[in-house]
Image (cartoon, rainbow, N blue to C red; front, top):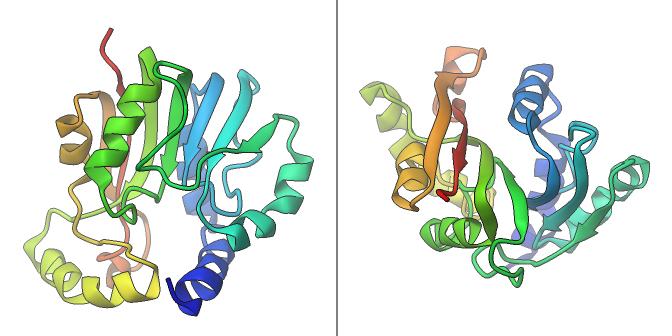
Length: 208
C-alpha cells in the first residue's frame, strides 16, 4: 500500500459521507441493531451517533490507523462503547456465533475478497442475527453500467480498491445469508452522479 492509499484515501473518505441524504440512509440502515454489533469498515465513524440505544457494544473492524485516529472525537462522544477489533474483514478473530448483528456501510465495495468477508459475517453472526448493509454497486441501466465499467479502474486507484460494478444483493445471497428486506434505488442526486450512487439498503439474516 502506498502513501495515497494509507494517507490520502482515508482523509477523502472521512471528509465525505456527511450529506444529509446519505446520513438518513445510514440512520435507516442502523435501525433494529441491538446487542453486540460488529461494524465492517468503521472508518472515521460516520455511523457513530446513529446506533440505537439497544446496542451494547460496537466492535469496529478498520484497517486504517489514519481513519481510526480521525474518528477519535466521534468515539469519545459515543454513549455506546466502541472498541477496535480486527484490521481485515476477510479474517475475523471473533468466535463463531458471537455477534448479534453486523453493520456494513459502503464497505463491501472495497474489500478485495468480498466472498470471504461475507462468509466471515455469516460465521460470526448468531443464528437469527442480521447483516445490516448500505452499499453502492452496479446500476440497473445499461447506459450507467457502461460508465461504471469505464470509471471503475480510476475509482479503484483513487479509493483504494473501491468497485462500482459489484452486485451487492447477489453477493449477499450467495453467502448463504437470507435477505429479508432490500431497497435498490439511485440516491436523490444529480444524474451525473449515477455511476456512484445506485444504493442497496437491506437486512439479511443468518438462518437458524
